[in-house]
Image (cartoon, rainbow, N blue to C red; front, side, top):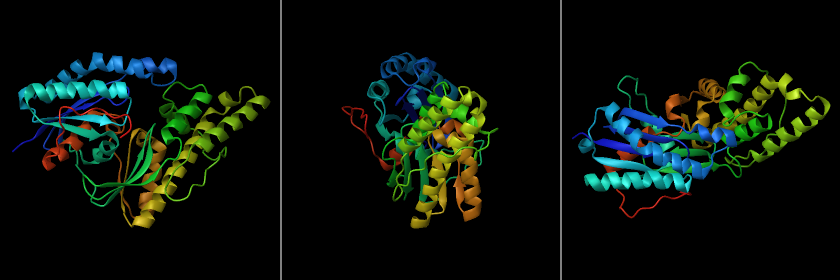
Length: 337
């Protein structure tokens, strides 16, 4: 029997709806919010208001693009958390209302687990290569940096976590120091392509185990620029590409080194990356090279699955549907989950 899932994602500033049938993606619509750029970061109140305006048209378009009627949906999956509470509340309320009106099951999904499960989305036009278990995944975004071991679609163990800032935050905050627009990560990636990654050296924290730390790197970068600008006021403009290349190389090296350590300790050679920062070309290339050198089976998600999207919520919801894991109508969103 065919299973069709409507998925809703509203954890931060992207409103997204997707339709998945039997693990295959039929549609995946995302409405972004450019209003936050002028503030240098996401403003929670503005984000939740934009979600309220976007969620109905985005869902309607997703259903039409998938050529699926509302009465063909078997269950509604939604992001319960973690995320901005106001944003999560919009998606949760919409999903509950849709499920209640259609008298179909409601499925709550952990946003971080969904990022990892994005590797299992099937595409009718793709090669549909998915990881074998056990699977080791580096989840790296603006708010999280973790190494996760997957035993199956539902069992995940966090082997390492950031003890302060996430890698994506390091990109954005260092970019802000250089007066880059928010989010700075994509621009740093673009400029790094023409720079010398060995031009400058920045602090690389030595944290035991598989945990991460990026606060020291941010401070090192800030003080380096402070001293350089005191001697040469146009230092950033004259060295923009080299600064970006050196910063990106430092962050990527920290991430990959920890991933290598986790692989050695666990013996897992099925290796992947997920999350917004997994779109970074430097990280992707470093993982490919490390994979060839160590005999890993590498899994790098399509760029459209790296940022916040409902397709990953849908595939997570699909696996939960198969296991019969449904939520009650009194469920509430969680900022920390």
